[in-house]
Amino acid sequence: MFSLAGSFFEDFLIISGLLLVQVAYGANNIFLNCILALGFDHLFLIATGSFIGAVIMLPIAIVLERKKWPKKLTSTMMVQFGLLALGGVTMFQALLMLGIKRTTPAVASAMPNLVPGFVFLMAAILRYEKFSIWCKYSMAKVLGTIVCLGGAIAMSFLQSPALPKMLTILNATYDNTYKDWMMGCFYLLAAIIIVSCIMVLQAATMVNFPAPFSLYVLTTLMGSILTAFVQIIVEGKFDVGTPNLSILSIISIIAAGSAVSSICIVYQTWCVSKKGPLLVSIFSPVQTVCATSFSTILFGQAIGVGSSIGMILMFIGLYIVLWAKTKEGVQSKKSMPLDVEKPLLS
Image 1 (cartoon, rainbow, N blue to C red):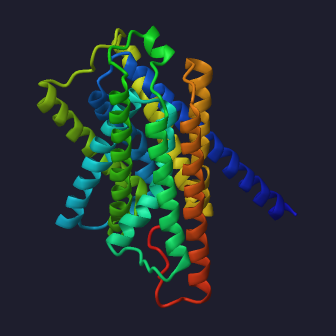
Image 2 (cartoon, rainbow, N blue to C red; image 1 turned 120 degrees about the horizontal axis):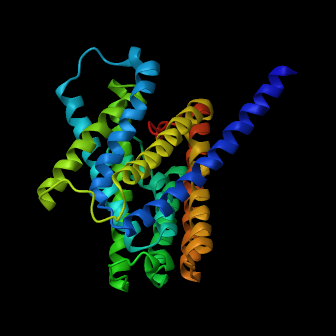
Image 3 (cartoon, rainbow, N blue to C red; image 1 turned 30 degrees about the vertical axis):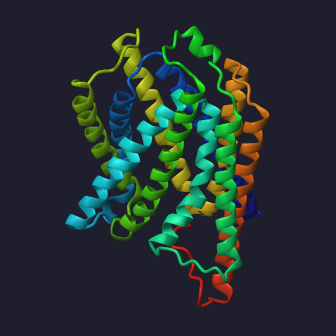
């Protein structure tokens, strides 16, 4: 009786928590849109936010994973850490922020639905996951990826850009033309491709470094330092930008965002350990719905029919990929076919 009640409570906690995490991610895109409009430099935000996030996660990594640390760091592992930092922190976040600034938080929140399909393609190309044209589940994942990509293209071309009310209030200086909109969509798509590659590399790295929190701390700290150097090289100095705010307000804003992101990462990692990555992935469209709702209610950023169709296509494609991965996993457990292996990346 108590065991059944405990299981129900755990399931309720996981599901409700995952919903809140996606709401937080959707709100975070709104938050980024606003602070970028205030004049914050995106490279400064990445460098400082990543550093604070690494500091927050460090005690958790030490307590939970100290025994999992390898006795020796090889040169291959150091190269992997560097690539994860460059791609997963500097490049991904920079492109994401540039994309948010030039489009809308709703579009930025929809693009991550492409990740499962792209990860499958990257893993198949690099032979981390076997692919066969004779396997219906492999073909279903390809179909889902194509549908997702079609949805992303529909969102890019069919949504007419309009200057959000909030950005007008905050005296935003960039010219949100159609060309600017398309560049923003390109930045977001590039960010998703990069993070898909990073997820494949991360899986390979964790074979010899099976400590996800520690890996996060290492790569985030390296990425923070790398991003600071990039800003110094590109702009000649490490500078916050032009926000008309006090230092205390700036630190508070960045720290709050980093703390929320860190909490979400810890919670999602716990959920993956309990229920697997599939359940976590299923909730990702909630982020898009929340960001769209927040944008419409708070800033009057209307979503056109074209973007709505694109979002629906992306959701359909995402669930096709997730369905195929689930069925493929069940099939591999039952029959272990010769042409399909259980994917390394769940």
